Each structure stands twice: as structure tokens, then as C-alpha cells.
Image (tube, rainbow, N blue to C red; front, side):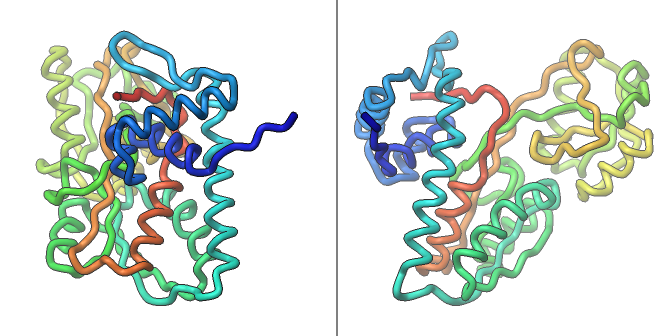
Length: 293
């Protein structure tokens, strides 16, 4: 007998996977933490699968949970697209969206292409700027919505994804063995730069900053030219870049948080629609997702 899945439960499951927390997921879907836990229990019973497993003191998505996640995302997105497409009243208007170019190459097509297809009467103006600049423009109501690096923007928002930072270099250029490590990093205010230098200092790895830019494209260019090693999040790593790690004598880097921020004036239904879409679309985690209760 076929099993019917509950879209509301799947939406909560996706939120847990993307936010890494039952509590944060509850805030995102407007449910108490106990209600979220009950939903996951019912979803596991319906699927007859364990979606989460213990890893030390934390829960992580199980192998079955990771398999279910991709189906859940597609089902939730199709549900939302269907409801929007069949709605008698289409939303219309303009949204000003800001995000750093660190995320633009991979996140923009995913976030905007589907949203624009579902909501053709909503115009989105995109500004690619630093997280700090986006934060300032959000505070001044010059932007409506921003996708930023959490520690760099100076504005409180909702974490929508966590992903690991990586040391990257051009494929097969041998820079992983060069000491001191030649770094291509952002300005001194960049949290990724601070984390990189902190990790190298703690591991007593000699290093020197040889290239500085606020542009992820410029940093990637320096790396591709074989000039230096950069620090980038998972979503900014593209073809031609090689990830370095502990086997190359480099310390492990922490996770970074991608956060969605909204201006005080961005409270119309069109803004809610885009923010909801971003929450669903920004994810596709390819690493084991840690989940806190």
C-alpha cells in the first residue's frame, strides 16, 4: 500500500537539515521545538526509517535521512510552485536583493531562476557587494533582502545554511607544500581571513598574505593563476580548484554560516515569498549535516 507523505512534515525536515537545529527549524516554520520533534517522529514512523543518528553528543542526518532530503526538497518546491502557479492573484512588485559574489555564481541561478518562473510579475534587482556593505544597506532600507556571511554583516538575521570552509588552490600546482603558505584572502574585516590566520597560527604553520581583495572572483583568479592559496566556502568552490587539507599540513577550518537578512521595510507578501523560497532553495548540502536539538 502506497504511503502518503505530509508536505508540512517534509518542510520541517528540510528546515532541520538546512539550519542544523530543531530549534532554528521551529522558528523558520513557526512551530515549537516539541512540535518539530513530534513531526519528525511521525515522519520516521510513516517512512519506517531513522532519519537521524547520533554522532557523539550531536545528531546527524542518517544515510536514509540524506536520501530522503533530496526527495523532500523536490516535493516541497513542487508543492509551492503548484500552489503559486494556480493562485488566482499573482503577486507583483520589485525586490532588491543583495549577496556577495562568493555565493552569486552557484546560488543565484538556483534561487532566482525558479522563483522568477513561479512569480513572473515580481522583478528582482540584484546587487553583488560585500556582506558588510549589504548589512549597512539593509539597515538603511536600500536593500530589501540580503544573503550574507553571518559574522561579516553586522545585522541580525536567520541562518539558512552552514557549510565548511576549505583551503583551495589551483589543481596540481603544488602550493600545498610551499612554506610559508601564500594566502589570497579578503580584507582584514573578513571573518574567513581571521579564521584562516587563527588556524595557521594555532598550528604553527608559517604564512604570508600575498593577495588581498574583497572580490571572490578576484581571489579565485589569483588562485587559478597559481599565485596563492585561498579560503572559500563549499558553495564558492568551482571546477579547476583543488581542496587542500590536513594531509597537506594545513589545519582544519571551521564552518561558516550563510544568513538571510531583511530590512525593516521588507514585510510585504512578495518579500515573504522570496524569503520562503530562499529558505527552501539554499541548501543542497553535500557533507554530513550536524543537527542540534
